[in-house]
Length: 220
Image (tube, rainbow, N blue to C red; front, top):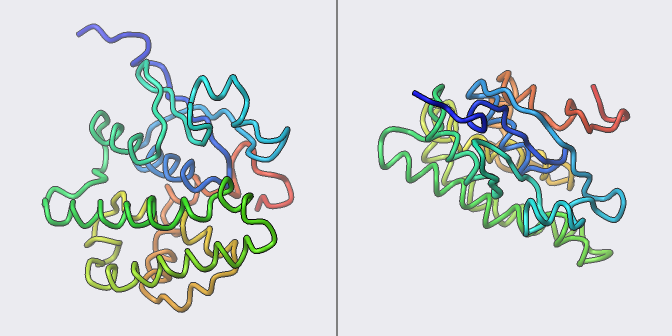
């Protein structure tokens, strides 16, 4: 079977070390064992490198990540993860059971739509002096909903005993919560799952502390 050069080339992730959406994609690549290249896009330096015309041509929303893969460019982390799930072998990121798959997608949407966008850089830059309290409010509001859901769905991981997209979304969001000084101990299921997942190699190698663009002062 003839394979195009585009399909043989390594994917390229345009992202930022601390971006939770970029981290989701890094976790998925690591879980699938996919080699990829990274192009850092600094969200603060130079007024925000995501705001350049060059990057806007890559991702019109001027957000990270953007992923060049198989001759196309994809943005939106969940779309990227679902694409690699559908096109690459390796551990599945969505359960075979339709009910569990729906639960995974529910948890992903709760985080990716109901929490993360309300405390991302573009939003809190508009808030001003109250940005920490704003972020804390919306993270806590989301975690108050997420905790009872996970209490029902979780086994070893967010949904049962297989790692899924839900886990990929959870860990970066907990990292954000801790950055904004949210007491994650209030949410014992979230805390337990996060601690379990951070012991897994794919979550370690993709961590914001060890990326090509990680500042030296926060490297381990």
